[in-house]
Image (cartoon, rainbow, N blue to C red; front, side, top):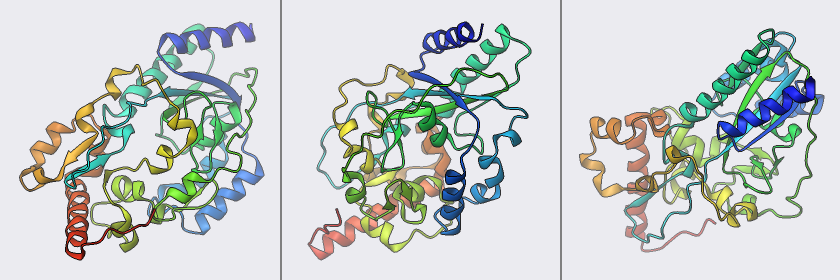
Length: 325
């Protein structure tokens, strides 16, 4: 029964278009708890106070679902391809994950459908599903389940799909047979660490959000003052940052793009900064409806754009290009 049930769930995940699915236990080891504690103590969470405020839930999934026995980990490949080469200064980049429809809508819908399917088969099972919406160590469980290994850029890397995929989880009080982790294939490679222009990757698998371009262009509140190092060294990222993914050998060899049409929008590879003076809040809401970019809010988006414009103008006045990478 147990193996057949697991097989049914795997088949349903494929029917829903999910990329991969694995099963693991719900325990968090002591080393991971200590790593999280130290990361918080060092202030690397920046102003994401929901992380330290919910450290207990991250360390103990029983606080999320009572008697949780297994965690089902799913991935969804989103790589939309590489942008065309544009050398004009007025074009700012948008992270690949944010080019199409917000993954919270797309991925969570698939996870909810899978969760409903599980309960249809066995109504006695209790479940809870999340897609970057709960206080969960998603990357820890993804690594432990064998979805991929944790790369030195802190992201989960799959030998086949690189790191361009979203993660969804289902907590369940049913005891499944668990899958095993896979080997770490980063080896001696440190391209991601060396490529980060602000030094946000302070050591392998450890990210200091306080100087991370993605944090400041996505997560930070619009009224937070962007640090000087980020302003100076962020050359062209308007929303998010893919640098540590772009240099990864497992991403550079990708040939396929996602088959999820909602994630493909070539118009959002770049944004023309020349448009910003006449870019109203209505324009923002219309262009980025159901987009992850809405998370930054209009005021934050304009702030991101203005910082890039100011940097480019200062660079032009100086007549030199910096070389931070």
